Image (cartoon, rainbow, N blue to C red):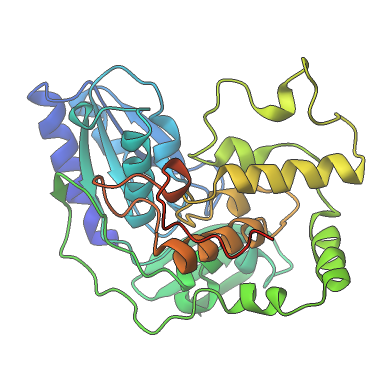
Length: 315
């Protein structure tokens, strides 16, 4: 993926010089290792700030909702699918966008790497399929495949679904990947065991709402947790309120989630938030044959009604 950056800079500079966009949204190097940051560039001379490597896991579609200017944006496969949802839900117009597509070779999980070493990591260098980790008295090479984000390890849509220009040749999509093995294990549990599983899962939650804020789908004008008239959810650490937040947020993402992993990446308590959204993602695929963000031609299943919709669940 390191070879993409010069092409990203060249396209971005051209778009800005020709006045085709007002801003290009990409990534710049973060202030700490493995934490690249969103970067908004409005002048051609500033495109040198852009970087691209396996630390660009933030979903930049999160910065598009309700913007009015013309925007260039650098996107991976999952980001592009969220852009499709934005267009369908009228949060951005397609003709406002110039989509710079990046065939993705997966993002790394900084928590997995940090857990491998007791000393502070000062630098992480990427070399194709290897990651070189450096710190005080530390230099170690690890295989990239061993430290991937969990959503990237099972991703089957690495190439952008929509784009105006690609920065490289499309990568081969993964085949024969079991994306829902973990979901089926939970589905097979008896009710009380499931209840305990999810209670234990969200027990560390501090209700910081980082998962909501990082999610490119959470753009309601007022979130239900912030409503006061009526108040749907309490502000305390009461387990019922915490449970309500996670379940209702997941249902808001049903038929819309692209499993980009932004929620888990943002969570300071390392909660596997995707366990909620993946179940609903699987249900939409099983019941409706629907995968979010794959086409501009159809509305999501929870956005439409058909007489032949599945109704076996109605008792």
